[in-house]
Length: 231
Image (cartoon, rainbow, N blue to C red; front, side, top):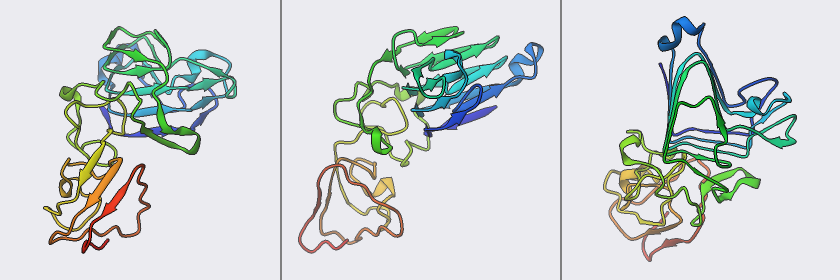
């Protein structure tokens, strides 16, 4: 069994099939010995050089059991990046989609069950510059199910906000630093919303001042540092 949690697959290129994940069973007699589960992940702007729309599917499974939960697929192309292709493709296996978002209605093939599927532009923050966070306009916000939320959190190890979003980035409008677990800026528990990457972030004067280290910190909104609160 392969479990994929809170991962981003973008701008990958495949020569034939599966520019994100190509998951193959040995043959149809071993179908249930190969299982793929994907939780709160994002597959966007991937490219297949092959001329079949099915080749564009960033999650491509054959003779396997495959399930996707709270997962976003958008704008994955084929024929050397010229046409938008299929988002999910399964051949000969058992594939179920739950609370997923795709490019257009019914943009999948070989799927057994598809429940609570939405489609359309997910309104990324700035995908042209590789920023696949959700903007405030995204229909993926609150579109997932808390039942499928991974215990590790989203891609930043942050918690969901009331209701889980679709994709690897949970949208968080604002948070205030409390330093309850230490000084690491990226520790979710140090923030009031249990999420270390919110649009607007406020740092008050508390006992534990945040430290960033060597990581690149991107704030999409306002970073407010109150008087006496060093960063």
